[in-house]
Image (cartoon, rainbow, N blue to C red; front, top):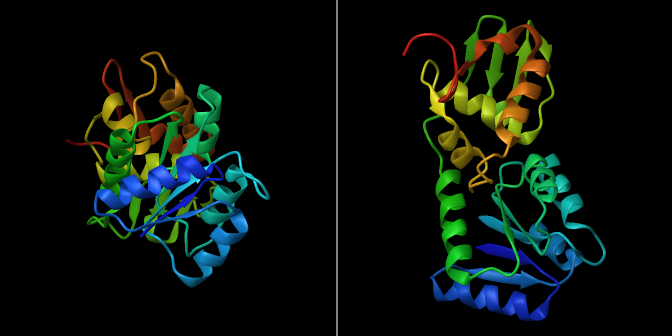
Length: 224
């Protein structure tokens, strides 16, 4: 089941119809209050969430979903008329899995939905990682350096886990962008570099474990 929270009637009806025509179960809501009521009854597989909404802002809804253990890993795609890179970064850094600007084509939307659902499928992720003074438990969303808890944003945590999952392997910039953000930024976009930099700072002593491979990408840990 896919939930769509969109107050524009024409867009909501079009998206629900388009998803249903592709074999997905989909339900649309015009108000956040109706959306939350439905969430109490049944959790969806994915949420399509508009930013500009009556009653409650979409970014606030996103934060509430990410703050709850029941919906922390629920796939969420943001829909908005806003185009600026800043708005994309804010939405993604607050935990959105992807971002699509209006107007959009149904084929593109369905492709994004498929990609996000595919990435959300359970994989054989290790129960925990230990490298030097760094300890990470993805299942419990724990990051510690020398036994002290470290607070990361959703994207920083995903980035760290992806690097640890591929310990010793150089991941290219394109691979990291695709796996973490799910869509292509502009060629000169520095979002990945900014996240790597803040991640290193927050990890303190363990930040040095993240290595830059000039002209290629990043890796964590030794060996190949």
